[in-house]
Image 1 (cartoon, rainbow, N blue to C red):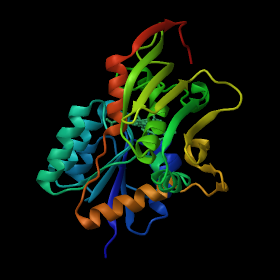
Image 2: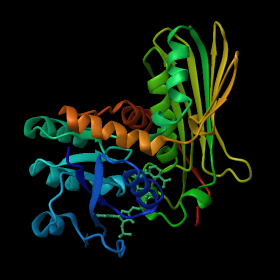
Image 3: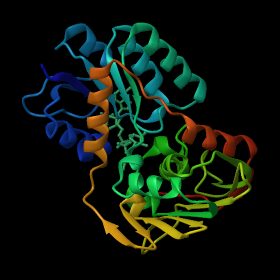
Image 4: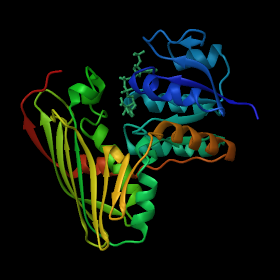
Length: 308
Ligand code: NAP
């Protein structure tokens, strides 16, 4: 079977750190081109400054991985789908729910694959956590996602703009895990979003959810954390406590702790190849919908200005 010729669009941090190595390590794909307005590209790989130029001038591609900020992703995805090209959307899949729904309908119409990739769902502890919880009754959940924005997002202006999500850019990773592992649906009861007075997106947020059986789920997001960072999910059940730490990489359950190698992006590309070969799409917007609900229902508090 011929490899899927893929172009990486948006040669920023995640493209270079994760997408390019994952593509290089997966024989189902061959890197055909890169696209980025300012990045110089890579030696020996055709490079364009915009997707339109690639689609007009070639080389031909079967798929694109859109690694841009979310605010520009809809137009790029629509342009690719119009030509029947398969699309991998980095998380979050779009800047609004309606635009992702429109892309999903378009992909179905043209028979192309649309994949909304949630990388944290491929963290090593997530699948076994989901399997363990499927047999248990969840009583309480606590999520603490505290990191230093200056370390992880230095100089990323888009992340503070409307649609950039602010602290929900990492927070949506936690939501992508808990929407996947918790056996029952849950919904927002209240939220406080803390915005620096010079920014359009929150630097911190406190959220309270409840599942359909009444179990409380709290979420503490903060981008002002210096020192040790926290990406932890604790689920109390009728059979003891489950803890996912390091963003889902380490799973602790009453019978012991499992550490495994990181395979998030290899997992994502394995899934993308399977979807393309099977003629299917996978566009789950549940994590984005919960973030949208936080912006819809949350109380705003203004805090001191933030400077990079
Ligand atoms: P980034 O470093 O700012 O990179 C984004 C890149 O997109 C920029 O380098 C820019 O290229 C390019 N771009 C902007 N507009 C474009 C357009 N119209 N066409 C083509 N390229 C365009 O951001 P990032 O951290 O990689 O994040 C990108 C996405 O990945 C976000 O949705 C983020 O949530 C997600 N993500 C990030 C991480 C992470 O650890 N950073 C982890 C997982 C997921 P030029 O530099 O050439 O202008």
